[in-house]
Length: 282
Image (cartoon, rainbow, N blue to C red; front, side):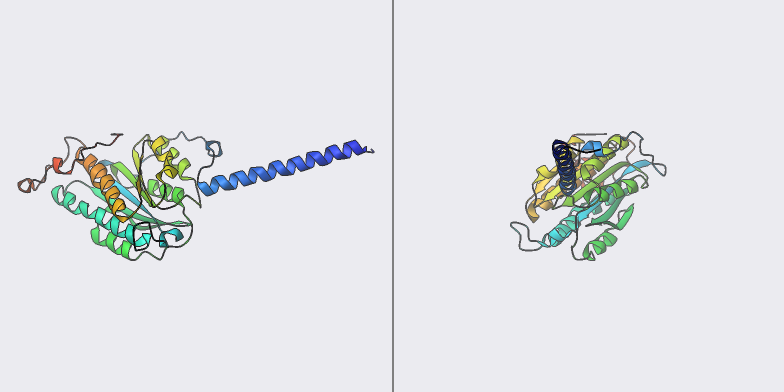
């Protein structure tokens, strides 16, 4: 069958249009993956509820996810030291609040796990009963920052461990200075966690030396995002989340809480309550 010149031009036009459309598709997809903001349609529908792997009772489990990507080697505005050192010290200071909490309520379970993420995710301390020495040693022995930023994968790994920890109250705290570059999108993971946990897993993000608007999707799933431009702001933000939200909320868990042991020293539930209550009480 012979083709006319007009037919050949039409066929070439169709081929070039197809090439352009395919190239545009892959360029758009790559940009979305780099920003951690792919379209919701790319994720399958999520309906099945998470199921705990053991009986759950009163208590709080906190998974702390710390960015250890290459950008954490940089110096934050207003600081003279690399961000990874500032962040590790801020987390250690935040966790020191747990000592007094556990002393006041020794029968109230508090589990704390520590995870580092770069191009992948590595649990440093599993979600077990708060162990100050183990957490401190893990922070001090973290490797030099390197690689990408797998925020979504870290959230997913922490969520799985939270459902093995045995407590009703579950929290994810993310400290990061960059956008997602590897693995699943944190937006999609956050949406999935919100839906499948039915709000049981609370999510907090601290944007360290980065615009907090990058993580507005956390607010869409009733989480909280704070911006910290330097080390002082980072410490204040982590304290606000940990002591002012998580521990204060745990103290308000109900009448089944064990009684305070150190009442003579004024160690009551009121001493840990935040003047601003969480926006999403369970």
